[in-house]
Image (cartoon, rainbow, N blue to C red; front, side, top):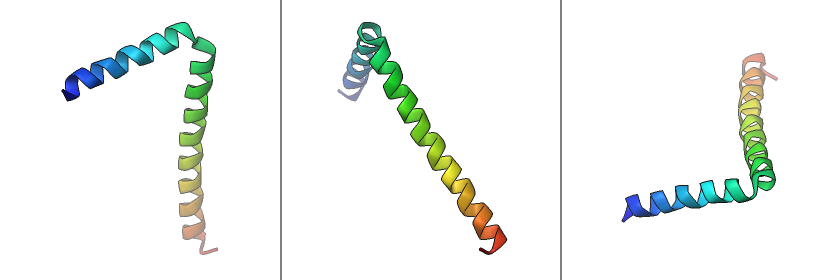
Length: 53
């Protein structure tokens, strides 16, 4: 059952990207920006920790 749901999800994702490439690109860009912000904040945390500020 999990395998079927996984393939269905992949199919729907490909279909959505194929029919709406602009909004799909915007969603991917915002997800990437969010992940980048998370790693940037983690880096800032460790720099501040090392500096003792």
